[in-house]
Length: 227
Image (cartoon, rainbow, N blue to C red; front, side, top):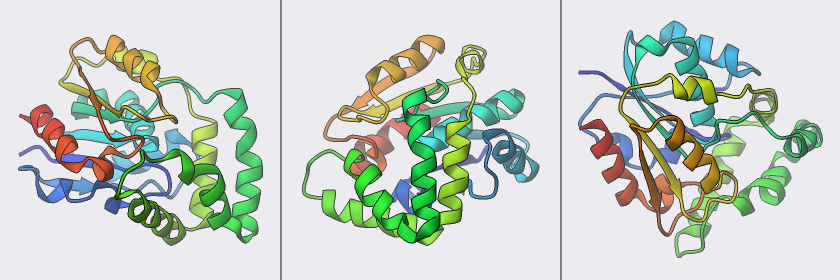
């Protein structure tokens, strides 16, 4: 059976996927990109140890890395799910914010960077919001400032992947939370247009982290994509 690789968002680990890995009827491999500071190198490190062929799902930074993996090894990716992500290179305004964030994190204020600059943009309002934000903080602090710096540089310098997606013909899912402000609808519509065989699914009651905010709806979508 072809395994499924799950790649979480920036400063997240396997906990970002909630119970999804235990509720899918396929072998699941979690990959946490921590050991390089370019998308190209992160993809090379992953591919060196990955199965010969695999389904691939990534959220946010995980989706960006998934696109680079697809670019480097299109024959190894059997199907692709992109959640709350962006196929474009990073815009100049966001790039400009990276260096001060990296400096603060490396100087000992990773928690402050996450609390002030990132966590407020993650989630829709709801009864689970505080607990999910606490989990996000714990994941970030567990990974630490050096990983934050490497992942930030990889995101800052990433290439545009529109041509990569246009060349993919396998089963594809494009999924987002309706309230996602980090990766809004136009990015997902673009990915759907580049892969007209894909399903575009917008999850209500969620923003940037549907696997934690709306786990049942996200699980159903992934099951349908894998069927």
